[in-house]
View 1: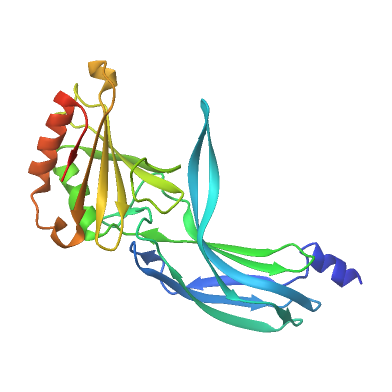
View 2 (view 1 turned 60 degrees about the horizontal axis):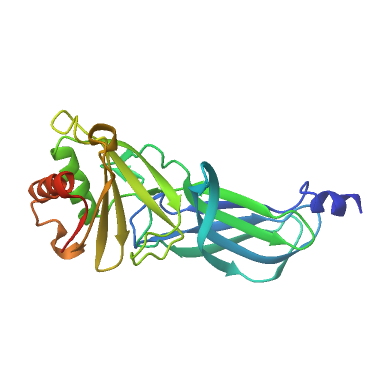
Length: 261
């Protein structure tokens, strides 16, 4: 009876350990791995075993902002079964990575502000504390995304940080309950006219919608300017993005936001 009570409280109960085949993925790819389970001191009934992607997002509430952990793309890899004492189990899984997955690596360098992103494993045990495991993953930018990010660096901007905002962008074909903002600070060429540029990718298998927010209030006393355009993955790496984005930013500075095809 004492062992059963302790198992219900999480002591001497089943343990879970997830091992990923790879810790670096691309948007639209797949996370694969194996969930290793070890039975505890007493038999236990497992309701299910699931894996999901987890991200730390910022939530605005009035004038305040707080962080929240969101799980998405949950996949159940085992239904109800009995965990025998000290018995070991291995469950392989495949977890799709959404095309809208936020980017955490730029040319192999971690993007500041994007450290909390990973695979969450849950072993749901009846009448007991659930056993969980969190494994971090990194997400490389797609070549189409990288081409645009590199263009900002070419224009004299530098990566500042990135974060995830809970909510939906009006008019965007967004599926996830949050979106990423990658922030650039201006170099000498743009200093005095631009405070900050935020880049958001809403990506799908065919291409991506790119949404830019230009903050010029600090210097020019005007509202932010917004721009959005769509580009196919197939042709994104063939365009002269430094020239195109430079023209877009100049027009945003002079006339506000607009749509660009």
